[in-house]
Length: 295
Image (cartoon, rainbow, N blue to C red):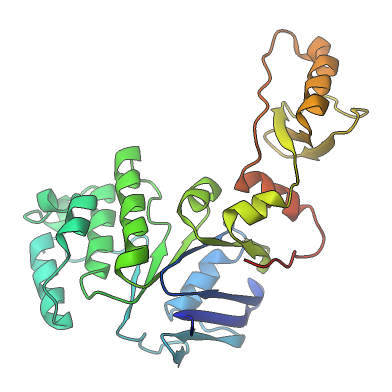
């Protein structure tokens, strides 16, 4: 089946280098990376705001370039977007519904995004979280096949964030395909059918969240303060990071490490946990070459 979005060898110096991935029908693909990963530049290329040096982007079977109008079946909700301060949300919904020839949003999405209380309000009176929910709703008014979301829950309160996540999950079946660009690995692990990990402008690895975590093998994780000396621990892999030093190994190996570290750490209680997508990203980032994976 032809992907709804196909990004092939996309490069833009110095931010992106030969980035490739696809988004198929009925799936949520999260492109994840920290602020210096090239994710913002990739997003700019996807929406037509930036021009790549090489490679190409195909949306809904149409190759698009810098400044081109995106296909009618594609919609995007970007951070910082808004409409005139005096316009009411209901007015914007009616206007876009007429432009797209639709009847507005399905009731299910109106409920998920808690849009009803916002309809009589003007955009200038909305909080950042309310404005974000309204702009996501407006992006969906035209029943797009491909939806591009830019960090859809960034800065939102927990309740609003959960509503947006549930709406994204709904899009998987009700629309076509969803591409989410974000820097929250925990959220990507919850939302995504597939994850594309970016590091320094290149694809570090791609696969399902479970497959990426499985790269760590049958291991557990324990974080310790970065000032603790952990050299000499047996059967434990050590990954130093700024906020903590992470120890990877079997549960017995980590329990033995606790016994060795206890004299240096006083009465602190250590927590051993299963690995997460964040652990996979940190570990893969320490590998010199990108990892090729099947989904």
